[in-house]
Amino acid sequence: MSRKQVRSFGWFYTSVVACLLTASTTVAETPRIWKRHTIDNSSRGADGARPLDVNGDGLLDLATGWEEGGLIRAYIHPGKPRVRQPWPAVSIGKVRSPEDAVFVDLDGDGNVDVVSSCEGRQKTMFVHWAPADRRDYLDPTKWVTEALPDSMNKQSWMFCVPLDVDGQHGVDLVTGSKAADAHVGWFQAPADRRNLKAWKWHPLCRAGWIMSLITMDVDHDGDLDIVMSDRKGSKRGCYWLSNPGKKAGVQTWEVRPIGALGLEVIFMAIGDLNGDGLTDFVVPVRGGDIQVLLRTKHATPQWSLSTIAMPPNTGTGKGAAIADVDLDGRMDVVYSCENSAGKIGVGWLSRTADQAVTKPNWTSHDISGSKDGVKFDLIEMIDLDGDGDLDVVTCEERHNLGVIWFENPTR
Image (tube, rainbow, N blue to C red; front, side, top):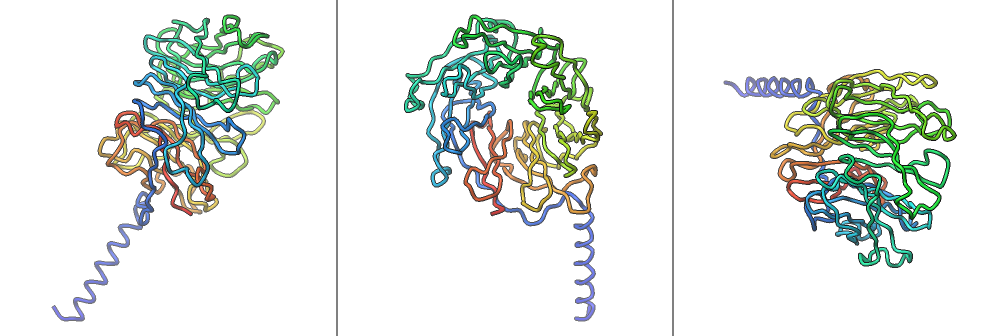
């Protein structure tokens, strides 16, 4: 072969390879490395992290239940210069099989308490009362744990969100459960919120296995409704419960469909995915793709359904988030996985400026790598290091990576 023929063949080979790469919408450019940082890995089975600024410093702190370790722990953001180190932490209570822990100032004294939800043999909600003196927040001996009596041995409690349902006595607790006798309902706060015996449970609707509970004004009538994802049972899918108004108190909340009905939906995420000013949802399906529920009407809530394909070499979808990861002005989708041994457990998906959000093949980007982690959980997008881009906060249960965050390399 002559030198001219060699050059011609090389040009032809390079052109073919370039065409093949261009044809695949799931091949990303050279990946940027997301560094993993450990907030806490001192126990076993970290099961979701819920954020709130508990000390008023403008930085989000975290609460986590450790399912196998049986601990409820709180983490105080140490400040941006020290955010890559393990965070100051406190074990605020010991319970069995906790599935969720959420910050809430339950008694209105200005100090943020924690409510935990337990399944297994425990089947009880617990209130972990914060110390009266804020300076004692990280002192485990100053925390007091009490069971919520009307929750004991009733259901396998899975998730909780604070919400003032009836307009009386401050915040109430909206909860969801799984398995036999599972419901979505709420615990009504009494006049004396420290008297847990006076809190009363009100079921709203039956459920199979509640994964997400989100409070938002879906119908724009001035009160907060409840959005939920239910992964099991005859009515699995995504729904919203219409708030009848605070004066109605314990009246019936109508259950209305959103979409992905009949599918094993996991954790939902909310955001304006297509930039039309309406709130959309994304939700992974166990063993399937990510469901996209685009809001189509403002006054009368309706959604259209499409899918985003899960990339190859990933686990099965678990958590999701809608966020502009790379600061290009378009919303991306971040996902976490379980069953990810030897596979990617956390990643994100982007689209080009001319690609509709309803197209299934988005470009995939690795976050976690495939070496560590088997079962990742809820995702929170927070700018932990203050550099202007959103980092990924999550937990990993099986390799005991614990409560972790991945540093966004965009900036």
